Length: 493
Image 1 (cartoon, rainbow, N blue to C red):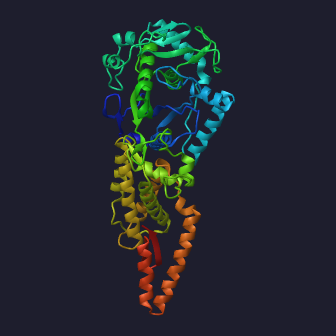
Image 2 (cartoon, rainbow, N blue to C red):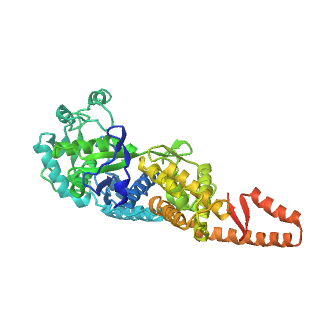
Image 3 (spheres, rainbow, N blue to C red):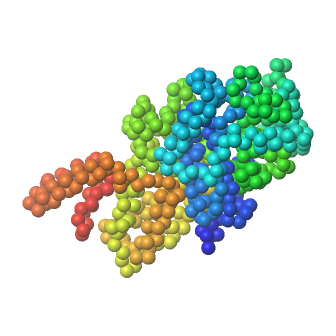
């Protein structure tokens, strides 16, 4: 029996605006698509937060025993600077500015993306398709949409007819926007556009003579629209309908709205059962922005080479910080927040490191089974990692109590506690035990051990004033000594 058979997940569905019981289309199998990066620059922390949230979702579904096909694309063509289908292709613009080939830009920043995700201990997706690798599928999809009467060609470009589509379908149902409101808030076309209406979006753009990235099509030498690639790749690898589509909140409109419209126009069905959106990452209470300078990239955060934070932080501390907030909440990245998370992370890992040294008793004074169920209940409630972490700290308290002989665990319960903690800390949250390997921590341990020996000598010489002074001054800097029958240990608070 797989764990998913005894764990009922509820997922907040952006399409319906409420939590729903999760039921996959095919028993025991899940198809999940997450919009990946446009590789024209270094991946930024907002993207990392989104991908980290879905990495945790992927990990938990796998932990429950589901066979998950996780598809996360690479946008390496077709993403214009403006959602209104104007401006340069972002990759082509970068190539022009740096006087290199567009695919050199793609290669450079795809490598950066993968390096950053490896640093943060991400699991790789099942499939990572690229937009340029699926031009044929996108052309076929456009042909179907034209054939079904929901798109039109003008001067070599093809546009999706939003007004025509809205006559028989509902454009805006994901973002809760009505077409009449969009019309009211859109400026009239200036006469230079090929679109019938401002709300229409490009499926295929005719390439200007200077445009490097271009492919032949029935309409022109050109390139596909940004929204089209995800529809083509998700349906190719996951089918006409699949279980989960994820991405950042900023993609809900127009990108995901257009995906739904394209799928319904071409295939006749809504593609996704559960839409999930991760919220924004702010920096010191303000939106991250390159133009204002309120931004920091992953390397700067990890190295400490920035003007926002007092020190460098490890990848696991940043993962832990992210997991202390719901994926659907705005998360404010601050130095105080990271310092608190670092403290909590090491406190948790200190307890985890004690597990192998705990001695079993004949009976338990702690209900480990009930605690374990609370951990699953938290994750089953829309992947509520903050509540899960609260339960993990509860386990840390149990571990310290057992270590101090103020609580007991039977051999069976001790094994259950170890198995459950390891599953959630390492497999689900994706944390790494830096407390065991960090050289700074090793040096701290060595220094405290020296002070513990000096304290023992003082007590042996009946110099209790010095003994108490060592204990109290360590406590003032957050190092708590604990005297037990097996000697003195310490924890960092």
